[in-house]
Image (tube, rainbow, N blue to C red):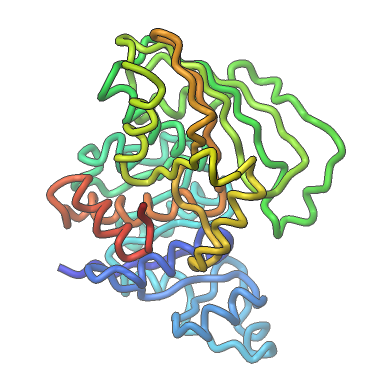
Amino acid sequence: MTVRVAVNGYGTIGKRVADAVAAQQDMVLVGVSKTRPNYEADRAVAKGYKLFIAGEGKKSEFDAAGIATAGTVPEMLQQADVVVDAAPEKIGRENLKLYDAANIRAIFQGGEKAAIAEASFNALGNYPRSKGKRRVRVVSCNTTGLSRAASVLTSRWGVESWEATIVRRAADPAESGRGPINGIMPTFTLPSHHGPDVQTIFPDLSIATTAVVVPTTLMHVHVNHVRLKTAPPGAQAVVEAFRETPRFHVFSAWEHVDGTPQVMEFAKDRARGGSDMMEGVLWENGIRVDGRELYFFQAIHQESIVVPENVDAIRAMFDLAPDARTSIAITDRALGIGH
């Protein structure tokens, strides 16, 4: 079976999801959408993607820019089996009306409330829960990172409690209107929304999160303190547990990756599309075990970590793979993710 996929929204996430879908052998990209012409719209057409007009967009504006369009979003939906909604945050609720009218399955992003979907999704955390579903929500970048880590720790040693501080980037690199800021901005919702969001994947996980915003565009960093139910034999056991799990990259001390600037330089050197880092990033010398107490840092590339999750969500919804590990292996091989 080949699933026909539409991507509604061709910005930071949408353009990456479109490329990821186009790379899969069991999926075909039927089109992407933009509200107005810009360099991303032009690039989509250059890649051979059919471009459809979203929202209040005007064909005359695309024509004036010399960018060919194939119709409107409702026309795109008629050609697809599932739509990945990659519209700006909170627009998905409005787009749901379109998807219901088209009687099409839909995947939403973590900027939408969990109630928009039948299930929240993380491939390592709860892949089977989305099988056969019509409405699925891929959780946010930070929730994705925490959920991936939780899948490792809960399955091996169990988690009694988890406290995480999320050091958030202020904006994505292209979002010049949101910065720069000269300051550290606490998030005064205590605890932050990230913990409850992780619980949409792991309902029984005892986790509390806080967040601060800092003046960087590169990545988020999580500062984690986890009390495990069973003590690991040492920090190296935790290191190896992460290393043997897909979608993690653990840097050794000898690599001299001191922080997020070197992580992103590493990603550029790999020459992966978009210079992305789709893995959760850990440091071998940033993992400490003291009995049942585990401390570790994790870095999250907010622009790309959810991209493979969207692909796996499609595969789960249409039951294209027998289990999570099979789907993850197919996705990661196509996208060049791996050790």
